[in-house]
Length: 215
Image 1 (cartoon, rainbow, N blue to C red):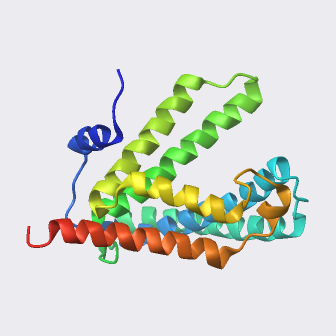
Image 2: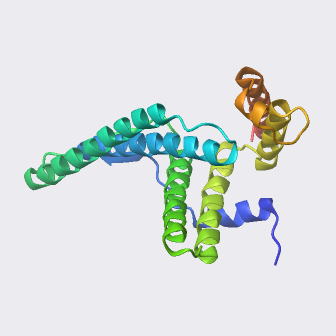
């Protein structure tokens, strides 16, 4: 059975868990933020390995070490915060922190995408360790990631086909011949690439608002 992205998005959000506000236990909030920071820094390290393996870029060991220090510091922050949460629950002093800066549906989509990619890391580690990649598991996690992306596009009104077209335009700015070269991958015009992204998203949001104006 084949399915269009539009149909997938419509069916996916039927199983969305909806909350009105984002609330995190006060003593757990630092652990949450530090976990995001540790994930962020680990991602920076893995990005350097990706560029080393596929783009033939020398591995920046010093930068990787710096990121590792930040990741380790954040991980220690998670440990201490969770320990504090245990104590707070014993004394019943923890309250909830409400986050109003991000729409709950968007927050759900972004956090869910992060966690699914963590499971992809688990699948990759299993493949490296055993010599066998569990394609069923990988496809499941990639599909779950698509579910969260569908939620994001549904919540923001941004059309994901437009996002895909945007990425192709960005790559055409990066690679003049529309094929990969190590030189162009290393010498990117980040300002020009960013402008392509800004223009595309502004147009997508404008079209969505225009279509839903007064509705």
